Image (tube, rainbow, N blue to C red):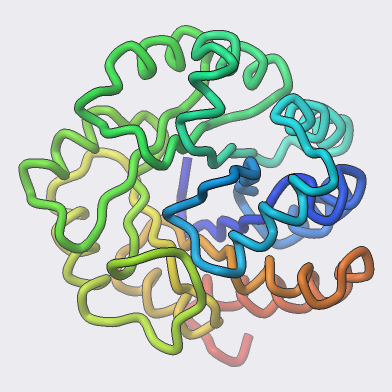
Length: 254
């Protein structure tokens, strides 16, 4: 699912479902995978930028079903891979198989259920496999080698590595913990590995790709542009993502 890929994240429904689709069409020009976050009232894994995006979308009446309509609309224009990022509560409330089936019918390629432990996911993984949806589980710098194997075994898309402890959000530099985890994951995982949380600059992308990452995930650096410019964020998003995509190459001057 990843091969020197740029994965970009935005929150569905922020500032509106229509603009989310517009933003996805901007992102797909430079991204290999688009990650669409489902707004949630208690996003404990997210920092303030994405928390505020969830609140903005929920205040405007966003419902989980709206994300399927957005993806369906995107599929009218693009075959670029789409991954949903969600907490497990909305999945459970809708009904696990119903959520997965509707995702597949809309054209979703994979799902990240942020707070679903890999070792409690057997039924979920089987249902995803049944409906042709890839699973992606998360590992952090303090994840043991043994647990990395469990996470890799449950994943069918890629393994999502967080660059540091804590929540999502821009960081000035990518620390050694990220590279240590990346090195361990590459020696253990059969799946591709992507690194997210804190990635916000072209040089971050380049350093992680050169260290062996199969993909790099950028979220808050894009979502903050939507916070700043609202419905007029298109050109700002395009400029930022075009810059980030340069990090996939070895040449800083490209």
